[in-house]
Amino acid sequence: MTTTPAAARPATGREVFAVGQFRGLFAGCTLFLTGETVRMLALSVTVYAATGSPLVAALAYAAGFLPHALGGTLLLSFADRRPPRTVLVGHEALRAAVGAVLAAGLLPAPAMLAPVFAAGLPGAVASAARTALLPDLPDGDRHVLGRAAFSMAAGATQVLGFATGGMLITALGAPGALWTTTATCLACAALLHLRLAHRRRRADGPAGIGETWRVNRALLRRPALRALLLAQWLPPALAVGAEGVLVPYATQAGAPDAIITRPRPRDRPARWPTATGPRRRARSDPSSARPRGGPQGADRWASRPPRTP
Image (cartoon, rainbow, N blue to C red):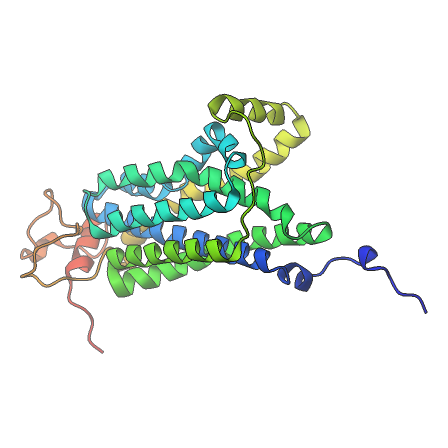
């Protein structure tokens, strides 16, 4: 009777998740993707409620994703010049700070896009550090399975983020959903700090736009690699464009329970923008509310009292 050497056996998912640091990195990535989807959905709801503009609402949703393209073309060389755990934890701390500013309502709705965009730029560096760290955890065939697990989790957590975001916005309103995502950022930072070992930076030397462009040009000059990169980039970019109009579409389609924020007492001053703006009529005028047709429909459902069983 012969036995197959361990090196010749195909890797299994159990072996991949038996690596403690891989579990920590995987859990942190899952928290990050779920929380980011919830945050951008809540931000889009808030901005659409305040402006009534589908374009601005779509830009608000995309503000968390578009900076990754810009950061990827300008800043990726910094991912190898800093320890990976420091990059990942620092990015989560930055996201938590931005989330707290958004949830506290310290900025007018259109201005909320600026800190989200600024926090998204180093997000490309954090994603690169996560990707570069992955081969150091499960090696050989286990790395292939681990990379596949990350790819599958990316799609699943986005769906989970939409479902969770809808429930949180319905139950807590957009501010409550934003506070929840701030808590997930802090939890993710703590998880990564505790579960990942400290590693030295991968490279020395200068880092900046010039170095990033040099590497990007070297990669894009290879036709086979360029085709693979475009196949990986373009579908998510198109998907983000479609998802950006989700909130205006849901309002016009007559899905009021998932829109805007919870009703607030009329005698309490508004700290958060509702769908009622300077171009809207007073709430006391029942003729100004329509159940469908864009922001006016959202006005009605944002101001109606809660249902009683």
